[in-house]
Every structure is written in C-alpha cells, then in structure tokens.
Length: 306
Image (cartoon, rainbow, N blue to C red; front, side, top):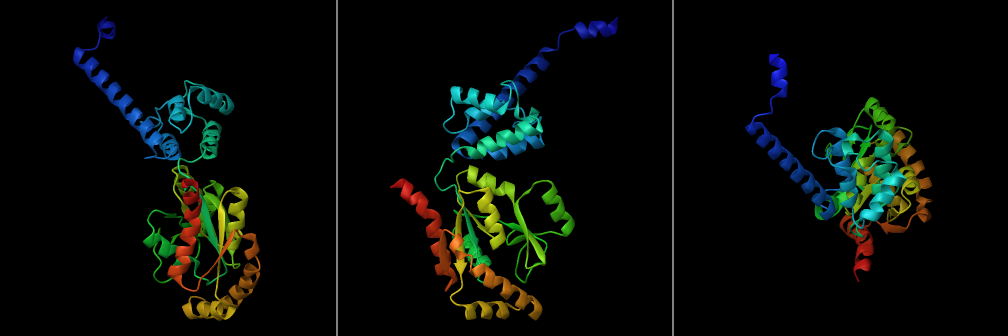
C-alpha cells in the first residue's frame, strides 16, 4: 500500500539535518538558562514561572535536575536529596511538574541562601501623613540599586501618583481575584475605607536574585509581613512631632475633615506601636530620612564584607 510505503520510508536527509540542528539549538538554549541561574542574571523563580507559563518552551523543557544543579551550593548529592524530599522524579522537566510539586520546588528555592547578603526585605511603615510614600519615592529615584515594591490598592490615585510606580490602582473585583489566587503576600483594609496589598512574586524574585527591596506599607501590613517573613527588617518612620503630623495631613488636602479625624485617631494607635520595629527614623527632612533608611538597609551587607 502506498501509505505503508510512505510510513516505512526514512525521512529525507535535509529533514534529519534540520531536526539535529533544532535539537542542538534547544540544548544550547537550556544551557544558557542554567548559566543565567548560576550567575544570577535570572532568578530561579523567574525561570520556574516561565516554565509554568510555557511548558513547551526552553524553560519548560529544562530537566529539574539541571535546574537544581544551577542553584548555588548544590551538587549531585544535594540535588538527589532534594529530589527525594520534594517527591520529584529525576526525569521530570520543569514544565511537567504538577501544582503541588511546583509549589514545593518554589518553597525550596526560597529557603536557599541568596547569592548576596543584600538580598533582604526591609519594611517601612508609620502613621498616616508621616511621608512614607515620599521617602520611598526619593529612594526609588536616587538609589537604583534598591528595588522598591509597588503595592496594590482600591483607592483612587492622588494628584501626581503614577500607575505601576506609586501603586497598582485596581477595583474591588480585581483585588478579590488577587486574594483568591494567592497573589498577595499580605493585604488589609486601612482606615476602614480602602484595601491595600503587596504582590508576592516581585518580592520573591528580587530577594532570590540577591537584591535589597524596600516595601512601604501600613502598620497592619508590616505585622503580616513579619509573620510571613521573620527575616524582614522593620523600620518605623516617625514625625518630628504630633503637631507636624497634623499639619502635613491637613496641608496635603486629599481627605475631607471627617476622613482627617479618622486618620488622626488611627495615627495615635500607630505611633504607640513603634517599639515593635527594629529601627526608628524621624522624618524631619525627606532626603535625610531616606539616607538613614538606605544606611540601615546596606549596613548588613557592609558588615558581611568586612
């Protein structure tokens, strides 16, 4: 039969050559990914996410064994032990992992020591109108070596605030979706009005890559982050005085009198919580306060290098 003859006919030489070249290119691409992980050009979590999104792509076709061996301080013995602990067969590829296997592997990556001592999360919190956002924005503009986390909120933008820079401004339905899908490290309702939350994955990726990250949030959020990540450093931003805090809140003109009174009542409670924090910085001047925060963030790295 003609069809049987066709099935028994070996592929043309040109097809074999093309297939061989494609296989070589795929191996080189996976080797490049392994090298990127090993050298820190890409975080291991970024590669895991790429494999999940495209199981048939370069990252998805990478064997879990190669992925583990690319991590710092993991050789063949530790790699085999990790596979046993994770319940993953050595023939598995990243794109073929089940949901639970992928989550166990993510937790394993996050438990590994970062390549740099600078890979730590610092939380900046304080009472309303103390200038947390202004200090964080100053650090973002003047210290590019420090990543600044961007929170999501259901409140409307204030004048001058930029989507994706100051906040991700979302509606209640989108915020509910982020909660349901586990995309937030923490979230809270602030001042009995709006919800604020911290996207999880940008923080995980940054810390895994060994970079310092600053997270500017409210007191409730700071407590939640500390519970989830005890290694995080907490900095409390204080106003020079109560009168100055009131002046700043009233002067910015973004809340009506009822909202101002509510926020000031909350501020009294927040100020009493400063002893829960690792450090206190007084915001007399934005540039000076920002410099103090940066010094506290980098002191750990400088100490490790001496």
